[in-house]
Length: 161
Image 1 (cartoon, rainbow, N blue to C red):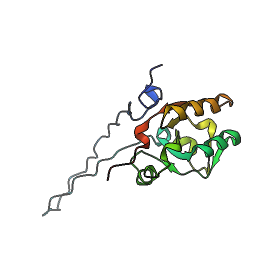
Image 2 (image 1 turned 90 degrees about the horizontal axis):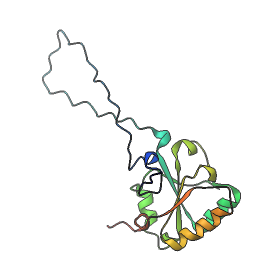
Image 3 (image 1 turned 45 degrees about the horizontal axis):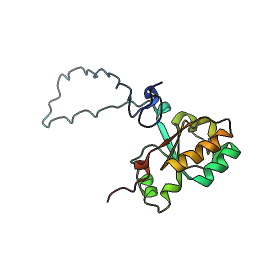
């Protein structure tokens, strides 16, 4: 099994292996018989189709909440981030205790319309350092949940202003 730099199977990561953009045939309009345009028509908007079910969502929680979620099987009222560049995530990274946080990665399909994150839908646990990785793996070993645990210090680095 080949892993990407995010700790997922290479074929599962939409960042490292983005799905091909679908080919959309341009719409052809019938020519107008009597209309005359004096101004140039605006360019058509680019249509991007995203498979939202496989899009990744991120939940940032303190390590203590991660421990509780492992015991309870779910995390109540999480705040989801769709990407690492979202403004709320950037603000969270400015917190002094960011290295004590855990990022839980799931799919949009698994969390759509839910007020809780079930731990069995978490595919990846991202932490800031190897000590936290070992701690997370030890906790997960006592449960039936089997997400990968990866260290990505850059995810926890405050953004430059």
